[in-house]
Image (cartoon, rainbow, N blue to C red; front, top):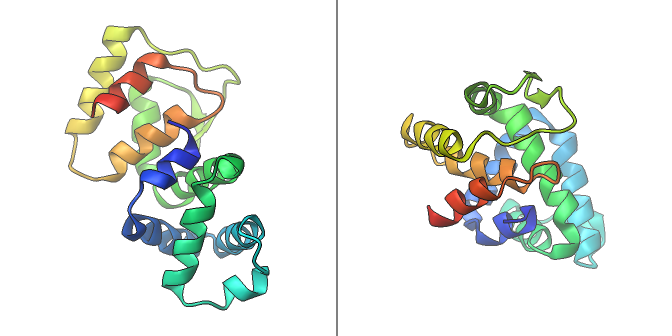
Length: 159
């Protein structure tokens, strides 16, 4: 699943929650995302920035769902997990045994664990709590351009 597909499948409520949390931690990132979404939808950024929150979120979600906005969608998911859910991201990366600093991977190339090990770690991560962001994190992690883990993709599709 690509980052734009994650937003296409996401409920408007969840997208609103993400935008709200990001606006608390990184208001500039939300402003830039709204401006980029406005341009993608052929709106003036000032127009969209002045709209009620529900309309802004709906427009941003629609824009991020487009294939042409894949990079922007990937960036917004990264900001969400790095700024708002670093605890969860750190838990996942630690479980995988990947070296990171504040959620940012130290290695340029990240190789997948063996199939059985990855299945076990994904199951353990999912079972740790019923936080819906756990599945979103798995999707966002797998959707990164640097991650090419077919087994993880398959596990996400089956969920």
